[in-house]
Image (cartoon, rainbow, N blue to C red; front, side, top):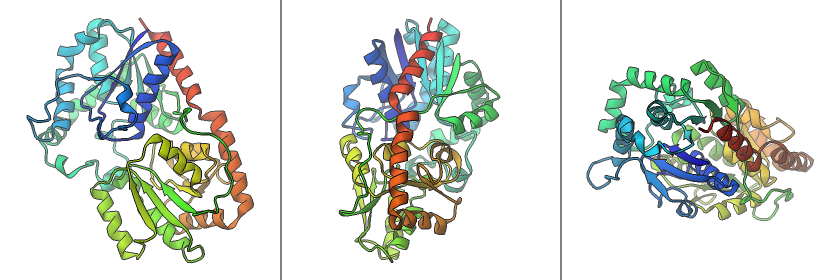
Amino acid sequence: MRIAIFHLAFIYSGGGEKLVLQEAEGLSKIGHQVEIFTSVVDEDKCFPDYIKKFQIRTFLPQIRFLVENHESTLILLSCVLSPFFAFRFRKFDVILAANQPSLWISFWVKKLFRVPYISYLAQPTRILHPRNIDKKTGLKFAKKTLNSLSTRLLERFKPFIKWADQTSVHNSNQVLCNGEYVKSILEKTYKIQAVSCPAGVDSRFKIGYVGIKYKKPYLLMTNRHYGQKRFEYGIFALSYILHKHPEFELLVSGEETDYTDLLKALINQLGLMEKVKFLGYVSEKELSALYRKASIYLYTAPEEDFGMGIIEAMAAGTPVVAWNNAGPAGIIDNGRSGLLANPFDATDYSHQVERLIANKNLYRKISQNAVKEVKTRFLFKKHINFLNSELTKDAT
């Protein structure tokens, strides 16, 4: 088949971007002709060691040197002008629409040229259906977008955006989603039937039990540096365990943002400057090694829809501590394949981390069961085979 994959933007190294690239690669290996389209792409900021394997096309010409905050402007223009460039996709057999506004653009291709589209959603559209954590921290990921024209227009035209969102979801030939938790949220929000198709660990990550990591032990966090991830809980956990286990450090991967500056101020206040290391962006190969060598993986996001870092750590046999809430609660079997803390009790979270350090039998059990869980439920091969089946079924 000839498959088009639509995605919002490739301007940072996030789980959604990684999954789209993996899907394009996986579907191509099956034998399909796959092309990726987006509103804006920056190869230096989005998995630079991986994205160069793909030829990603944009819906519109790039205008980074002509307007301020060009990313949000291009995304907005792609939405507004989608009926006028829909003809570009008339010869595709099927479209895989990864989150909004991909669904809206796909809707016009289907309406004008009868090309079916499968939607893949990691969450409801956030500007319309923010989570509690989004309401607390805000949805703006960079200061430059706070007062941009695009942001003001989005606020002004929310009623239309809500209609467009609902319309494009309901006109999907099928709605797939990243896990059972997201499935329940989407079905409640959009009054639809969704199908769970969780992401998986691909062959670039070594899967297997390593054992307890005694040499240079460290805690690990790998999420994007945004307020919604609440890295503070991990810093508090480090401070808690250092009283009994002064040999531990905390390593944090990911590109730095304004939020990182707030974290560094907290670390300085707690006197942990020598114990916390910010690694910046790391390649997939380096990330795999970090997971395997880490003693414990900390997943501190309070209201995450899925949690790709969780299953990547589990695949390496590294025990995970997360909250007993939202997506992580559907991945981890508490006490068997990981530990879930009481939401959002910083003391209990820190206690769960200390339990793993102090109880070697518990550590081994969770580590071994985590690997088994990934092999059973979260292999990328399973994800891509199911995705291929759905795309084939609905292709023109």
